Image (cartoon, rainbow, N blue to C red; front, top):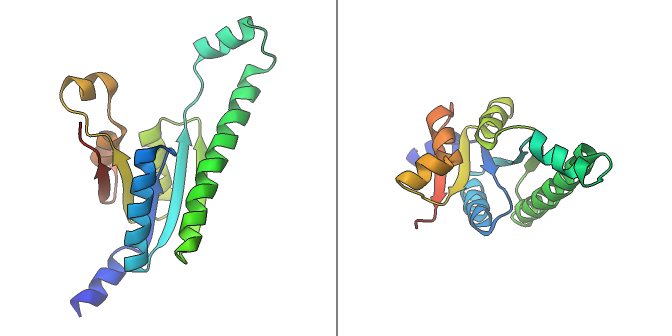
Length: 159
């Protein structure tokens, strides 16, 4: 009986990824969990808006349509990351959806996606920075944990 409760606990796991080696480990861990729980998976890649300083610099260097160029590169990268993750899910026989959310701060995008996708668990990676490094660099994982409406599982690599 208790085991049946576990299977109904999480039905849609949101896995946030950026295609990094650490994120790939979190993807693998999230897929194993989804398989064990018979849950569906939603993968999300969030790309940030390009800064006006970067746009101005590119334009000054003669790049025609720097915003369009940036968006094309980001879309291609997100598609590559999401396709790779979706292929891993399919190999495990899991249903999955992929989402590229552009022009968002990563933590805000992850939280927005978990709400819109009806996710009931977020799986993501964190480098495990502490102290001043976290204060100076910020922590996407910390922001997601602090603001997520659902539980967050962190695959962590410590310093």
